[in-house]
Amino acid sequence: MSSLIVHGGTPLRGRITPSANKNAVLPVLCATLLTREPLRLHGVPDITDVRKILDIFRSLGSEARMDHATGTLELHHRDTVFDAARDRLPEEMRSSIMLVPPLLARFGIARLEDNVKGCTLGVREIDPHVDVFRRFGGKVERASGSLLVRCAGPLTPAQHWLDYASVTTTENFVLCAAAANGSSTLTNAASEPHVQEFCRFMAMLGVRIEGIGTSRLTVHGGSALGGGEFRFDEDFHEITTFLALGAITGGDVVVRNSAPENFPLIDRTFDKFGVTVTHADGWSRASSTGPLKVQTPFTSNVLTKVEAAPWPYFPVDLLPIFIALGVRAQGNAMFWNKVYDGALGWTGELSKFGAHVFSSDPHRLISFGGSPLTPAVVESPYIIRVAIALFMVAASIEGRSEIRNAAPIRRAHPRFAENLRSLGAQVEWTSEE
Ligand SMILES: CC(=O)N[C@H]1[C@@H](OP(=O)(O)OP(=O)(O)OC[C@H]2O[C@@H](n3ccc(=O)[nH]c3=O)[C@H](O)[C@@H]2O)O[C@H](CO)[C@@H](O)[C@@H]1O
Ligand SMILES: C=C(OP(=O)(O)O)C(=O)O
Image (cartoon, rainbow, N blue to C red; front, top):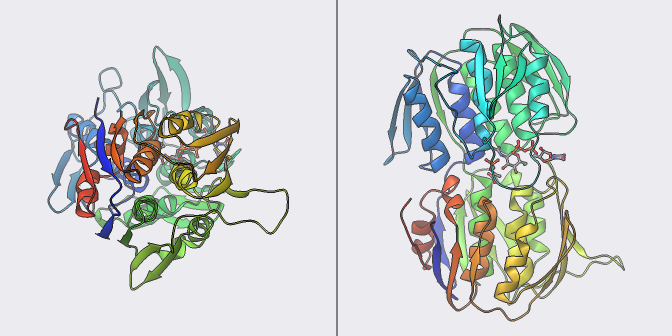
């Protein structure tokens, strides 16, 4: 078990250049399997989920050369072979499910392990994915401990309307549609910045996509896909995380940010906790005058609230980070996770720091912020952003705290402890890897 040990209470100060977004990089990596042409990807983060995908590529016979010093990945799926009886897709990460369409398109079969689950956020359905595979002509059946998906001939174009704007289901639809010969349309598509980035990568491969960034995507598939070069954008999760770390420790952190147009709602949410975010010349900065304080609403009988749902709502993966700000800020706030039904169970750990939060139901939490906090040993669930949130609270308290089971952070944030130390944090992992 990897724990993070922090001696908190130091205001973090300095500049951070964020890495790419895991949730853009992983669907892109899965998509690369659709083309037999060479590819060069820039800004690939050294995170455990990426390593797992590259390992499976190599075991299938693909060439994958990663230069960790520059973040450049050379990929070539020319002699790739998949054997459903032998090859196992990576476990403990949701993204493995996006290897299914390229495997179907190339080999007519894919096998998905039941343990292809990501963070333990509650129910994470497989059925919307199964619906998509079936729409494109896939046959789906249960095998022991896995799902088998087959397609005797080429995938056929499809029209589909999702029950809800699911991120990876949208990406799976686009992957299937790129391989299907004709035009396919998805309604109620997800539109997160990482979904848009993934679609731009598909366009670079030669797939024409209309409606990127909207809730209806039309994909013109079937043409031979090319190779090329692609550079990943900065991760808005990591940008927000470091800005929040600066704010919660009373410091001054400046983060590179080439896409401030994605931030108006995130900025307003910071504002609700007394943190002002400014963007200038490709950098973002969080500042506060004095201790954090929750804004008082003008409406009577309501709490200041953070309402997380599919984009363009406030992003659900950022909710724990703002819960951390909530327990630090004077005043009360409500956090509403409209997506997951099991994403707030961890909040009892906050009481070990002396924080006061109340779960009104599986989707809603109220923070009664501003209580004096003391260092603690806490245990993170298998949820990347919760390990970070617990770390944030610990970093704001003078003294030694320990975040047990913090390794999920390595799924998404390369050089996390190194970046923190560059800002002045006293932090270390108890074990490497
Ligand atoms: C690899 C990857 O990209 N993972 C992200 C992706 O997961 P993922 O694509 O698995 O998440 P989905 O968008 O499918 O949502 C997950 C679950 O939330 C529930 N749900 C979701 C939306 C909704 O309007 N109603 C609803 O009930 C469903 O039970 C669903 O199974 O998107 C999630 C939501 O932004 C993020 O937390 C994950 O980090
Ligand atoms: C929940 C996440 O990842 P996954 O979907 O792989 O569990 C995440 O990136 O925060």
